[in-house]
Structure formats: C-alpha cells, structure tokens
Length: 167
Image (cartoon, rainbow, N blue to C red; front, top):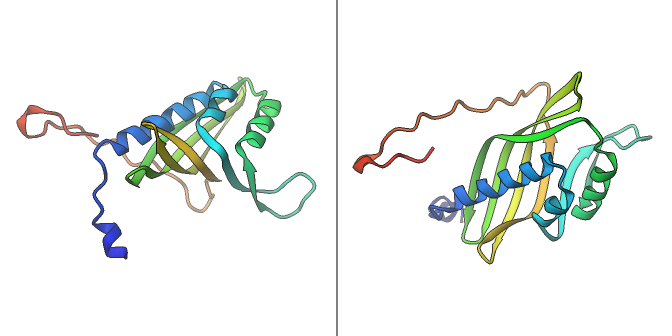
C-alpha cells in the first residue's frame, strides 16, 4: 500500500489551487471577516489545537466546531494588530482530497507591542464543485526547542521551451 501512495500522480493544478484557497483563508482571517472565514469550511468542519484552558493546570487537545471558533474569535480578537500569513507550505493530494501543512506567522497585539508567533497549521481539504473547502484544521504553536524556519525561496529559472518553471 505504501508503494502505491508513493506512485500516485498529483494533479498538476492541485498544488496551486490548494495554496490559493489557503492564502484566501489567511486573508479572511487577517481581515477578521468571520462570515468569510466560516464559509471556507464545510458544515461540521473542526479546528483543533492543544491549549491550557483558563483555570486548568495541564494542556489538553481542544476540538471545536468552526462555528465555535468564529464565535470565540469574533468576541475576543480586539487586538489593534492582527494578521496571519503563510511562510511555507507543502501540499499533497489525490483527486478531490488534499492536505496542506503550513508554516505560518501570526502578529497580534497593540500597535506599540506587537507579538509575533509561528506555528504549523495542518489543513485537510476537499474539492467540491471546482472549489477547495476545509474539512479540518489542526494547529500547534512553534516549540522553543524546534524553531520553525521557512526554507529559502527558490529562484525561478526558465524551463525548456522558454516557459518559466513553477516556483
């Protein structure tokens, strides 16, 4: 079975289409357009992370619906500065299913004290009627002992026939 997965050919447009959908998600999140953030997910989509809830001593995995996430964020994200962007992504997929693992950077806070945090977002997406929507998103913050560094940007060179190679 593992050999079969290694030989699966990925649709040539899958990578670009999934990355475009993920970029739109981050743009909507940064704009705090909660209705648009919600629409990036299928009904029943979930968002999961490990956190230590207020009043608890130990971290635990928290799984919430997209509606719960949007409600919590729209009530609590009053920072003057709030933006999230993709630094690097790895996309894999087959047919109408794809995963994108993203190194992302979040900036939040007051204009005079902006905090920058990095982490990993793991998106699971499904294509329906030509568009990609998120079924699940799991994220973790950067670990102090394992600093996240985005790989250097590749230089785009002309391919055979005069066309430019994809980045």
